Image (cartoon, rainbow, N blue to C red; front, side, top):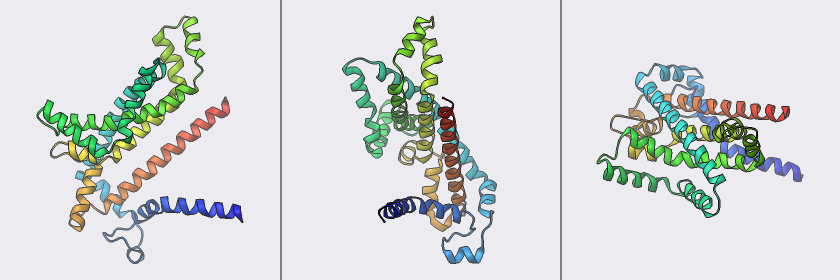
Amino acid sequence: MKKLGQIAYIALILLFIYAPIFTLVLYSFVDSPIVSIKQAFEIGFSFELYKKLFNDAALMKIVWDTLLLACIVAVIATILGTLGALGIHYSKGKLGKGVSAFSRIPVINAEIVTAVALVLLFAMVFTESRSYFAMVVGHLVITTPFVVLSVIPKLKQLDPNLYEAALDLGATPFGALVKVIIPEILPGILSGFMLSITLSLDDYIISAYTKPAGFDTISTYVYGAMAKSNANSSLPALRALSAIIFVVIILVVVAKNVHVRRKEAKR
């Protein structure tokens, strides 16, 4: 009975977390602005919303702009975060601890505070607080610390003698870093990269405060579409877009876990 109770408790928690997402995926096959069981059975299930999504040129432009932004941010954040994690890990004394503490501030800080601070900074330095550059910097502020947090545990698991052994065998410091350290911490780097993409795609507050006029990300467009309610004909197609994003992320996570397990099995 105790075991059944534990299973039921876990099942309820999972149901609470994933029921809204599964509902979203289900209704992405119902071409109706109203989400209801009655409408689903009356209209039936189809791929009409997916067709509308891919046939909507304006919406597809927003999707590609958002993906491009996320990729740019993820690449830069991964490089900065990995270098930062290496610097923190190999720093001696209070310097490494101090930098590590400061790197976590954007993680625990309220995002609205970060957004307002960025707007004030760019308005003071560049006289223009809204630009594509400002938006990239804002996304980097919230994504880079997560790369650091993903890479540091892998560095702590690393055998400290590997780097010195590579130097003793004739490798240059840069060669030892690229050929020895990076391959060992690669899972953490990839996790940080995926986190950066997800956070960039998901972000609304930073994007809303820093985006230039006429530019929209998926999150800002969704908010605008919801504000206009049924006046926006693209609103139902956003269910299909959200479902696609969810499925792609799940597939990537599963593929990564399978790869890591196979690699560990070989070892």
